[in-house]
Image (cartoon, rainbow, N blue to C red; front, side):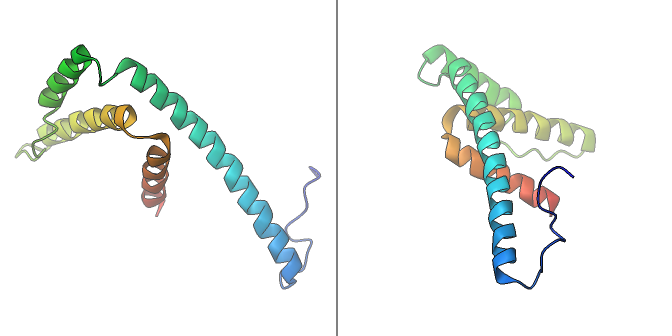
Length: 120
């Protein structure tokens, strides 16, 4: 064994045992959350460095990218392949915009909520 308590070793009807297992599960989730938060913070820092929205040149590039990606238009198109391309372009623009403009906590909530919804 790896030294960790076996979840089947205790009485699942013992409130103290159940509470201990819940605390352990919560700590593991907290550790994973910290790793995810660090990853998001690092990526957001890099995006903010590259896409500094206070720089007029960057704003010009982002505006051009917004137009190219048709971020303010509907991605609907009669040809499914063209529609998929437009959706992809919009996703790229919104990802850059999110990482450049939103704070780390908001990004964490958006990304973890999105992943939870994708699994369910």
